[in-house]
Length: 255
Image (cartoon, helix red, strand yellow):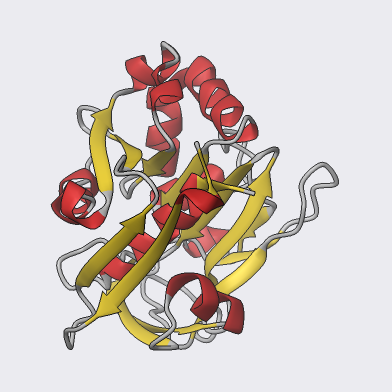
């Protein structure tokens, strides 16, 4: 975990696809240490996509971490853990209770958590297998398999401050991610909305207009750590990778 004063991040958006082109001015040259979760039969290529741009040239040192390594306490060697796409319940099952407890402890003690799609489901306070590290539930849970398509998201002023000072609206790939809305868990703080969905997909019986206006990117604190969740997939080929990169930087910093 690293204090805010250790670096100043400058992200340059220079392509029509908003692909990440970044420069980091740092008080020290140590990159952000990122653990990317993966396991056999995860059904996800998210770890591969993330390792294409969470690289030393962009200020990151990324490493794949297994459920067994998390259970063994290896998160202590990292600043941030990223839970990518796949299946939230599958991730929870792979982690087992001891692994889920280890992730909670890591974040509570000051580590960062970045959840993407399945990783956002996992972080939520909605399911029996959830980590309960962000006060969010899933809207229209019965129609979670609503489809895959490009959708439009709108950053809030806070989202622009944290994730992008050049654009407020992005087209981004969506694949059955959670429609996030506030939960009411008394032992968790409320979250801050960084982006909402401006368009939707409503297949497989999902009702029209249920998705628009729900929350696409949210952030909060859990203990001394930071949590940021992305429902859509900014890590895929067309990005925008910059949203994930700046989200990882934010999660890596303690106040």
